[in-house]
Picture 1 (cartoon, helix red, strand yellow):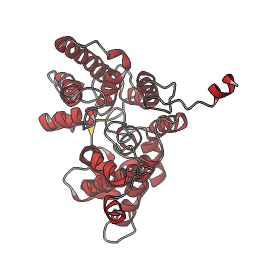
Picture 2 (cartoon, helix red, strand yellow):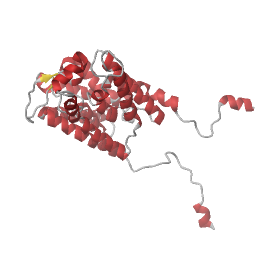
Picture 3 (cartoon, helix red, strand yellow):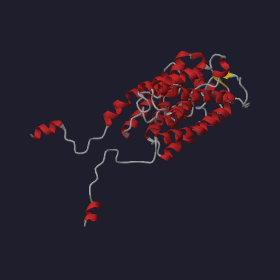
Picture 4 (cartoon, one colour):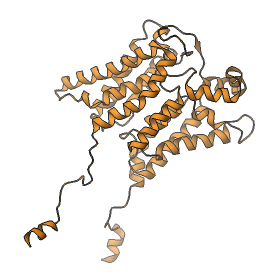
Length: 346
């Protein structure tokens, strides 16, 4: 009888009650692994310059985090992979032309890494407390501080060891300034344009060029359950609809959504930046609202703003609203009674 009673005893414990074998370190390294195809594609198309800049961002991020921990007397957490991931994302958002633009622009990735890791993450309380995506803040700081160096783009080069390359405009830049006719003139017919955008054989940031490589990594995260479909689908879906309706010249419903979806930082932002656990809503309804906001702001900037790209600014703006969105759509607590109802019962 005693054994039977013990089997039916109610065990009360401190939350969380649902546990998993996943750790912060495993998630961080898994996301870095998912980014590997896109990072390798960037190195393939832009050569040793891309590898050097990406590695410089990773090493700088890890070193600055380690130095910060030593300065404040905390135990080092560099091994959890968050600094590596921040550096990798930051490097993938840098132009490969930073190396050849000037001998003095090598400091740009280093300073951007400091801003991302120390100012954006650690000074806000460390991992889990940052308001904004650290890699995007690092890139935004670099863009504001060195606009010329951060907006000169290199053509893909067949020579891996080549440290110099011709500069050219990105597809979004051509589309913004000269329209789709010029874009087709540069890349050939529409199918040829799509293939260049999908594979990554065009100018752009190091890690955002190959839409296929990014999609492979995003689907891996989706398969492993590290992200859900809510933010990427709502982000890309909203952007596609707006591009189709308002993206054409002279008439509605004549835009090409495919070009916008696989150009620039759209895919990288939707799958890897907007889905950041810390800076995005945790509630599913909130994630859909967050994704819609990102897609809307991205296309608003692309179509009506001064910049040809808007993913970075869109995500950072929506980071501000993530806590408000979470509070606005949070589920009702089980068993809770509305205050006015309670007064009426009295």
